[in-house]
Image (cartoon, rainbow, N blue to C red; front, top):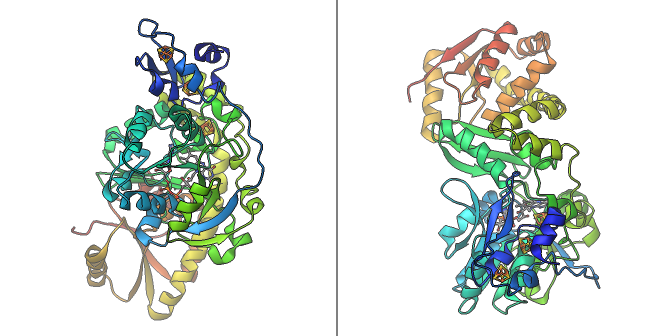
Length: 501
Ligand SMILES: Cc1cc2nc3c(=O)[nH]c(=O)nc-3n(C[C@H](O)[C@H](O)[C@H](O)COP(=O)(O)OP(=O)(O)OC[C@H]3O[C@@H](n4cnc5c(N)ncnc54)[C@H](O)[C@@H]3O)c2cc1C
Ligand code: SF4
Ligand code: SF4
Ligand code: SF4
C-alpha cells in the first residue's frame, strides 16, 4: 500500500509524524491541514519521481508489532533543582537529560513555542534555549524539517530528540535505525489535540490581552493539572485543565487526532530509549519519593537509555512497573475518542467562529465538571478561611478580609500599610498573592452552593469579620462583579478600594 491510498482508506492510520515529508528527496510532500486542523501529507505529482522512499519510511505503513520480552526498568525520579522542577511538567527528567547532552557540546530537539505561541519542534543549543522546550504543550507539535536537522547534527555531535512516541518512531524510520550519538526520549502520550483549535483559541484570547506566558502545567499550586496563561495587562487564566475552554476538550478526548484512538506506538511498540510521564499515585507505592513540585515516572527501554539516565543527578527510586503502569493507562492503551468528537469537528468545519463553537460545547458538556469543582472549592475555601481567621480573631476586635490581585515584595508591604493607616483595630487577611484565582473560583463556588448567603453570613459573624475590601480593578475578569454582587447579597459591607501603585 502507498501513503495516499492509506490516507484515503483511513486517515486514522496516519499520525502526522512527517517522516515522509522529511525523507522526500524532491521536497514533493507538503504537510497540509485538513478541516479538523491536523496535518497530513500531500504529494505534488509534478515534483514526485516515484522513488518510493516516503512509503518505505512511513512508520504506519511499515508497522510491525513488537513482543515485549521483559518489562522495562521503571523508576520514580525528581530533579531537585527548584527552578527547573517548578517549570517542568513532571519531575524535570527531560531537563536533567538535556543538560548532559548540552554539557557535552550536543543539541536538544523538542516541542517549544514560536513567537505567536504556535507549538513547533525546534532546537536548543544552550541552557537558555532549553527553557522554551521545558514543559508539556497539549497541542500536536509541527515537526517541520527537524528530522533533517537531527540527521545533520548527528554527524558531529550528540543529540537528544524528545517528542511523542509516533514522532520518535518517525525519526527512527527517517534515519533508517538508531545512531550512536542519538538519545530518544518519548513522553507517555494521552493524545495530541488539533493545532488549529489551539491557534484559534490563543488568537481569540490573545487579541484582547497580548499573551506574555503560557504554561499548560503550572505548579503555582503544586504538581497537578492546571493551565496558566499570563497577559500583558496583568490579567491571567489560571484553571484546572478540565475547566479551561481549550484543554477541557483535550482532557475529555474530544479534540485529539484520529490516529490517537488507535495509536500504534504505545508500549511495547515505542522506539525511544526512555519514556517519561507523571508518577501519579506515588504516595501509594513509594511515599518517600513524593514531592509536591512533581515526580516523574521513567521507563528505560535500552542500554543507551540506562547509561544516560544513570549519569543524571536525580533523586531516584526503582519501582514496580505495574505500580506506575496501572495508574497511567495511556502508556499501554490508546485513548478512546469521546462520542461527541465527530459532531464537534463537523460543527467547527461549518463555522468560521471556532471560539463560539468551543464555548457552545463547553457550556453544554462541562456543566457537570464545573459543578463538582465548585463544590470541591467551596469546602476548601471554608477550611482555609477558618484556619487563617482563627488566630486573627484572638488579637483584634474586628477582622477585615481583603480581596486583592497579585502582589509581590514591596508592593505587598505598601498595600498593608495602606490598610494600617486607613483602618483601626483590624486583623487583615489578604487573599493573595498566589491565592487570587483560587479565591475567585472559590467565591463563585460559594455563590452556587450558598444561594442566600446565610451560611456565609454566619461564618462571617463567627469569625468577627467587620467588612470586606475588594480591590478595583481586580484581575479576576468577569468574576470581579460576581464577587462584589455576591458579597453584597450576603449582607456584608463591601468597600472597593484602589491603592496607589
Ligand atoms: C500531548 C501530551 C500528552 C501527554 N500525556 C501524558 C499522559 O497521559 N500521562 C503522563 O504521565 N504524561 C503525559 N505527558 C507527559 C508529561 O506531561 C510530561 O511531559 C513528561 O512527564 C515529561 O516531564 P518532565 O518534567 O520530565 O519534562 P518537561 O520539561 O515537562 O518535558 C518537556 C518535553 O516534553 C516534550 N513535549 C512537550 N510538549 C510536546 C508536544 N506537544 N509534542 C511532543 N513532545 C512534547 C518535549 O519535547 C518537551 O520539550 C503528555 C505530554 C504531552 C505533550
Ligand atoms: S515517491 Fe519519492 S519523490 Fe515521490 S513523494 Fe515519495 S519520496 Fe517524494
Ligand atoms: S510518514 Fe507519518 S505523516 Fe507520513 S503518511 Fe506515514 S504516518 Fe503519515
Ligand atoms: S497518541 Fe499515539 S498517535 Fe497520538 S500523538 Fe500520541 S503517539 Fe502519536
